[in-house]
Each structure stands twice: as C-alpha cells, then as structure tokens.
Image 1 (cartoon, rainbow, N blue to C red):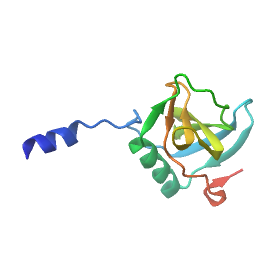
Image 2: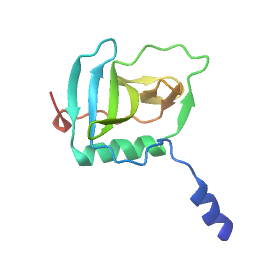
Image 3: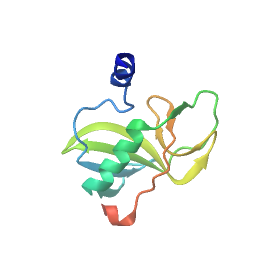
Image 4: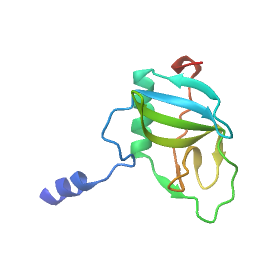
Length: 120
C-alpha cells in the first residue's frame, strides 16, 4: 500500500510551471499578429489540466505541417511557456492540436478554443 502512494507521489506533470496561467495569447505562427487573448479562468484551467496530464509523443522522424498559431501561456504579463496550436485536429499516431515545438513533443489533447473563451 505504501509503495502505491510513493509511485503516485512521484508522477511528474508535463508542464513545468508552478505559477497559475492567467491568460493565453494567441499569435499567428508565421508572424507576430495577435489573434486573441483568452482570459476565461475555467477554460484556461481545463486546457492546462488536460495538457499537464496528456500523453505525449515525440516528433522525431515525423513529417507534418507547422501549427497555425503560437499560444503564449502567461501569468499576468510573464510568459510561462509557449506551444503550437492546430485549428483542425491533425492525425498522426493520435489526434492532436497542441505541439511543444521547443521539446519536439505532440500532446494528445483535442480541446479546441471556443469562441466564447477569448476576445480579439
């Protein structure tokens, strides 16, 4: 029984930030044009939780298109981490929308951005 608690306690999360995400900036992938700012707390928590616990797969030896957008996950004005986002689900080994291009990993999360969750 103790070993079970020890294993659960040692599981790591995908996202390496201890700070709360307060907004997500959506930026065009090929430029710096700001598309939207998401500050809906419940929606942000849903996305962050899904990414934090998602299965990931390496992009090594994969050929696929670039994401449509860059997502800047921020705590107030401080950038915590950045990911790529696909408007449409792409199917490689799994269905994905989120891409950690700095680590070369796809996150098996399909949650789309709802229009109600962001402002332009």
